[in-house]
Image (cartoon, rainbow, N blue to C red; front, side, top):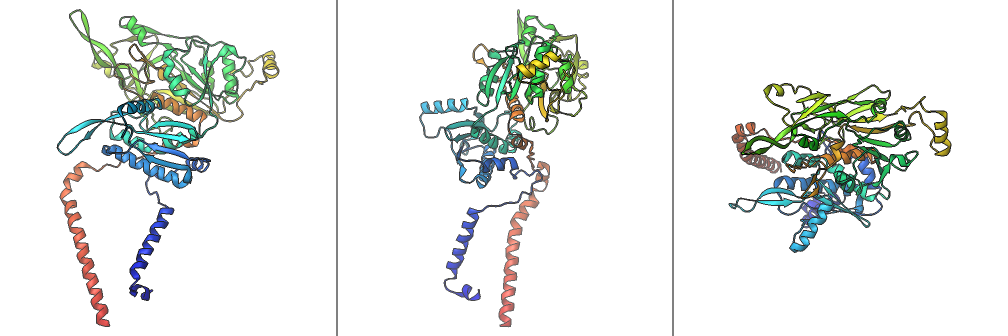
Length: 569
């Protein structure tokens, strides 16, 4: 070794060694995740997905060019995550970063923007510094990713479901959800078969423009879809993986309830979106300021009670709510309107770390009712959405008024906290109709319809109960037509209703392992500004003096060692 180092060609050996080390490092990577929340550890479900790819997935990230600092950080985290994906998936993961619209004509750029919008990728308007001394400009950033697999193309908006006014926290949440967003998109685009969803009708469920976004933008692009009139079939076919019951207006008879019950006992998944009381903003506007919310008589109480929940005959009012136009005075003979918070439209959020609603913006509700969980053997109940800590319950007969909160004393009555509005039920459900079905009906089910009556499910099943049918409906504008699900028609703020609904669907009929990655924490560890200001001089001096002192110390030690070695010689 000594001879090699003393050789005149030692520099060649050193360079060759460095090249070899760098080549090995480029071929094999490794790192240890020391973060408390394991933010850099890819979940086993994602690893299994990436290793099972049989053809390449091309991923184009639309975060390139001169970006604001927060989006640069998101782009860097996306690059790191995709690098991890490529380490696991090999050549079947290919990714590129592009700046949308760069170097193309305005006409082509308009087509591109329209295509991105149809894929669900929406722009974010940000302020960015132009040049030194030239101030700031408004700029559109498309925080999206395009996936290509075989002949299929899909898009994912990295900020979907995040607050558009929460700045750094929204970008932080988007980073926390990167693995889920990317893995979920890959999982969906590679599927040769998709779950089939039935939209149940026959009891006054909406089928017009008010569910346009639900059906055309949320369900059809992601699932097989069919409208199912409940009286058109003797039993609900097991070809349907999930059943949606959205805002029925008329009561269910016992035969209809038996069909739904036996569909669940056969393993079918159900999302119930039920308004027990009739109340709508249109009714309020037609009634000139107030009306009584009344029970719909849906006849579903016993069925839901058997499964483990009860929707109460009340209305949830919340000080954490969205805004609608209210009359605050008059100018001449015309009312003077102003956007004001309205407690009947609460903004719901998760109260725990369940993967369905964690890291989401608020979900907009309209006249929700409270939900109680009740004893049901073997059923696990998880609250997905609840009100804030400033809530009250308006019991029936519930009078809905435009000006519901009149004074400070009214404000003091909002003392209830976290009233459940959406609940996940999991376990071995038992049939409401055990010992209630006649022998003739059982024979018909078994022999004629080839669907024997089941008193309970064979294995664990799951359903979601939401006490607000309007959670998935959309407002309709005279100028724009159907708006997006969760969009306030007066402020045009987009809440996270669609993201929440799609997460519910994914949990029921998708890959539960990948959805679990939504539960990751991504702690934003910011410096304490007060401590930074107090110790600024110390750290500046330390950063200047310490490197110089270390160099001097190294020089002294090196000189002392050489002197000692040559003295001995």
